[in-house]
Amino acid sequence: MPHRDDELNGRDRTIKVRGQTRTYLDRRRVGRRDYYLLEPIGSAFRERYLAFDPRHGPGGSFFLLQVWPAGPSTQRKLRLLSRLKDDCLPHAEEYQRRGDSVEIVMTWIEGISLTEYFENIRQGRRPPVDPGQAVRLIRGLASAVCKLHQKPQIAHGDIQPPNVIVTDHTSRLVLIDFGSAWATESTAFRDEGDGLHRCYAAPELQGAGTPVAGFFADQFSVSVLFYQLLTQQLPYGGLGGKAGRPEHVGRAKDSLVAPSKISDACRALPRSLRDGIDRVVTRGLELDPDGRYPDRHAWLDDLFEVYARFRLTPELSPVASTLTRVIHWFVKPRGGK
Image (cartoon, rainbow, N blue to C red; front, side, top):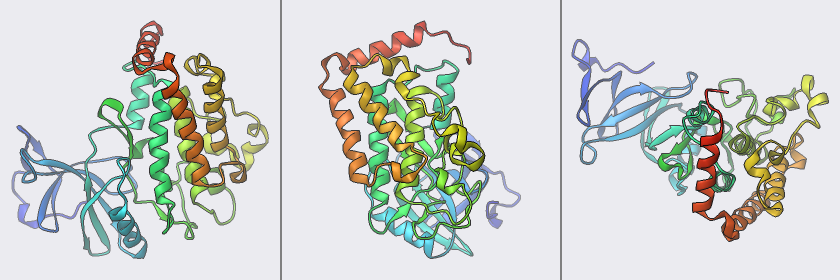
């Protein structure tokens, strides 16, 4: 729950936000600035708010305010985020300890969550992502994730649609929640709601014994998103990472269908591109981590190779690709099916 601002008890909790009057939940002072919490964002398991600073920039600015537990792990995450410079990762503006927690103010990313993005596609409110755009988006996200796995190695551990923002104009995917990130050597005692959405979490995080998270687990989660962008489905017949659980692994082991067998847009690609996408996606989705890409260099090299082929294929120019995608959208029956 928010920390109540005693000075505001009994007062009207409204503020002008870019010309509109809005009610706020609480006011937090972090560093030298006051942030007005407008609404909770995302997971119910962690505190995360859309915040507004009326004195930042012309007309005020939005921020993401998160509350993490105080401790060495949070300090490591903050040091890492302060050093990383990537358009697909958030930037920590400032932070302050309050009791047994740390309040972190991060840049606000204009866009919608990948959850809402997928729902808009399902409801026919926007066209599906064309394969070339999907490759570009995932290549950027994978590159950012790989930066986390440089020393000191930090596993994100919660790569799933609610924690990924599709920026305006679909220019990139941005990770917004690092509250469940952890050092790769400290991966035990995790459960649902703490970075373990079972459809997106790697199978090795869901079995018996001590889970070992790291590059392989994050690679699997990104690959689930890649598959979903291409097909609007979860891999392994909708099971995703649950396919590796003991009750499913027997029948799910050979049930992964390549994107080109599902997506008309993938199937229509030149064979080299179609096979390249299928190879990158299915390898990243191997239930056994030993079957996935062995390191970030191999993964990014294959993604870049497919991305480069799209750019070098004349018939897949941005104009032709967009026109094909729009035509497909208009001729496809809509209505939530």
